[in-house]
Length: 114
Length: 112
Figure 1 (cartoon, chains in turn cyan, brown):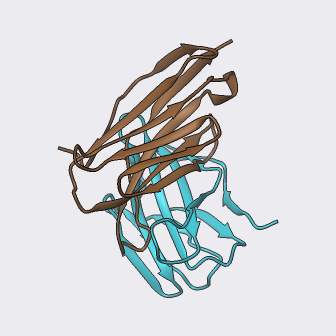
Figure 2 (spheres, rainbow over the protein chains, first blue to last red):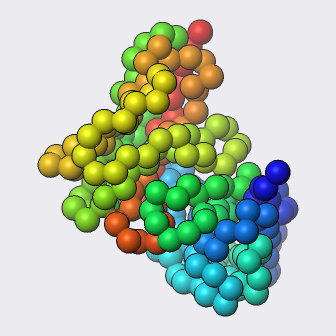
């Protein structure tokens, strides 16, 4: 069955370290998204991609970067981790470019920055 | 003012109750309206979506959109303990290539 996976599921790191969160989907979806979820803020869009070599900034992109070298993967990199980036991170994908297309979410990565 | 506002909760109801969850929004360009359900320590999953104003029913769930008031609702009839989850509303502008704006979510607990 097609799915979307994230790794690691839990990560503890120190301030200033570079961290990469992996997202892999087997739906063959063109669209992929990274969100963070924080109490009191809900889901906020970090970066998104509409296809290979395409990346776009979301509403909270500072301190994060993504690259899309193939259809299946959209890794999220925290260049220099900060305590404010402690959060739960969700990756999602959708098939095409209309708003009613379902976004399928991964199980999340819980990141703690000490 | 955030584009999408959602009652913060949490909300606790007895089994069998009718639940009403609501969101308001400020962007009149929103055309697509969705409700996602998120169980504890899981990713959100799409529950229902509607386009423009009107009602849509799916089993015990009814989604309602009132564009004139910029107000959407999700009704759950005969609520069950298995409905205990966080519910997030989400919206999109027509032609936005599926970029969604989410409400903060409300946590519902249905007591047996």
